[in-house]
Length: 179
Image (cartoon, rainbow, N blue to C red; front, side, top):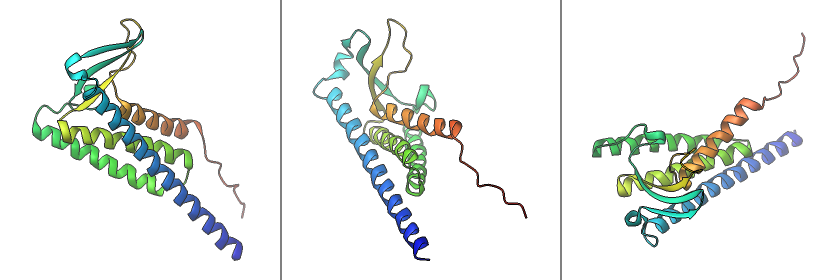
């Protein structure tokens, strides 16, 4: 009996630690996203400059993204904008609940990346009516990615981590007992 209570307490402590880690990672992603967007918007004045070549394969390029990934759900009106805010906020709330209940540390981190990025983009959409995108990775004229920001990168990495784990790892089933 004492062993099972002790095991339960250890499990609850681990869950709390995972939650703390998850929400800390989400807050860090949000902070880095907002700081980078501030830097390109104000000190670098990228909105006026439009493009700054940093490296042969990487530019800073101002893009006002009125939609979500790959131009889907473009919000051309104020109503569309607020519906998009509501949709992404609802998804963020779902991710928050999932993160709160998640027991696996790796999934907690992946969910935190998604949550921090989603909140960063929601704040932009509320503040400006669009999401500030600026990172342009390219190889000559070939652009394997759309122009993105830290939030987009975090969301993408988080979703890919969740998909890889779901598709490539299998939970071990308990041995079947014969009766």
